[in-house]
Length: 286
Image (cartoon, rainbow, N blue to C red; front, side, top):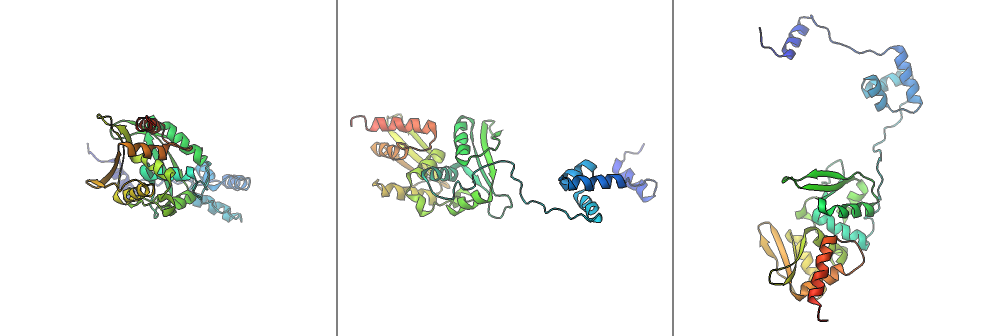
């Protein structure tokens, strides 16, 4: 018995005209039904799936009967959101731009789909809910795991307007390319968002409060400018490979925590709790 693949046998029989190709032809009645259903409002895509033919064949049937096809819509909006969320700079929009700069994904300019994606650990689900509330988004939340098996929750939105506005604020593709525009550099709401994403607030074993921010050099240089604008000293940048860090320790960390977190507006709940502890520790005697 020959061990031949079925496709080899099929081609052998086709070449010798022993096997005829199966064809699918619609009857005149079915073609009439297609025309009637199209005029009633059904799309060529749905009709093609129903009758097991291609969309081009469906359009050919309609054109043969003198029916002009409706123009195809470029984008069908099946979910709702606020396209103008980042059109103007407000304390809330500045915060979320900062958070996206730290933890978000923005698709490249050359890609057809303009994607904004934010995925966090499951423990920060409330942050995803707050982000969707800000965008007035009705998108279904993403649930997956990272490389270590940890559960993650997120949301992904495709919007040309949101994508364009974020790029205009400096929130672009690739963390190493992200530099905030001057209007954001001095915003405490913006830097609160960045620290909520890529910062750390903690009290060391020596009972020393500390706020640390890590990231690429261009962004951290702007953070140092922000600190100097608010009368902090010029903190040095510490390098760890491609990543840089800025550490604010002692009483200045309490001043920074008060500046960033003692305000009305969005913030990551677990980091705000640590910020309150730092403030109490640094200003207990006042």
